[in-house]
Length: 117
Image (cartoon, rainbow, N blue to C red):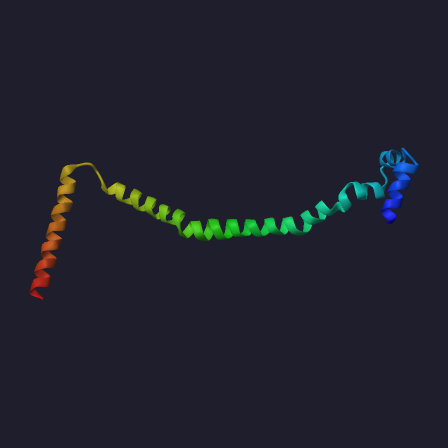
């Protein structure tokens, strides 16, 4: 009721008083104009805390733990293995034939050892 009476006085009985009060820009006007600073208070209490938790879970949990051990970790190991084995590939057929000969000799040795044991 009090607000209704004040609004009627300012805007109906004393026309132009609202514009003069707004032009003067006192502390009460600034307080009401900025919606009791509710947005700033909400930002300081809830939004910052939620942003902090979101960054913590994103950077600490998702990027370091989930991606680090999952797809990024697996791809890094695969890349390292690929670079290591790529050095073994020379492109010369006699190198590949020699490695196959070593493999066949190794398999024959294992077969003879397992058969005689």
